[in-house]
Image 1: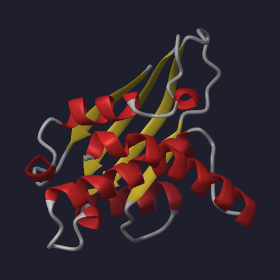
Image 2: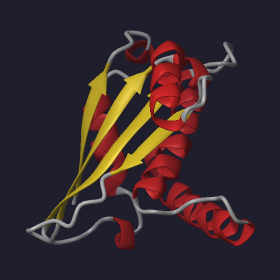
Image 3: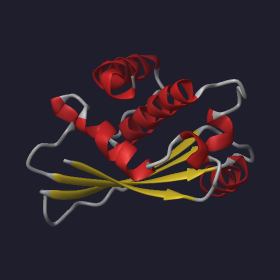
Image 4: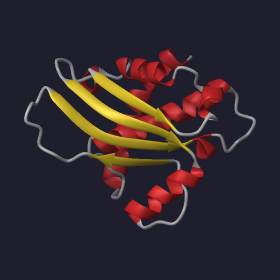
Length: 153
């Protein structure tokens, strides 16, 4: 079971996603079985932020002085209890997700879900530096997205 602890530091998120913690925790219930971690308690933190704050974090931790859509920080620590695991942190920028001002709430949520899945896979050590890894990650993203589409719609 995946538990998403949601923190929000930009009020704009509430205009598009009302019950944020409920939304992301329910979303994870629609993940394919291999990503549901049955009989385990998997935790992660999601920070819903904005361009200004994500730019600061990107500069501090990645030495890139620009905003971005998402940052993922996997928590690499061998847990004492293999049934309870903290995966890490994901930060998503509202401004980046809402850069097309005409997005309705449904399209906005779809974009957020896609980028959340991307960040989630980074927490599981997927990356897209090499082409073969990019293809592998993209395939997993698409599988997860197909399984959660019924939740979004």
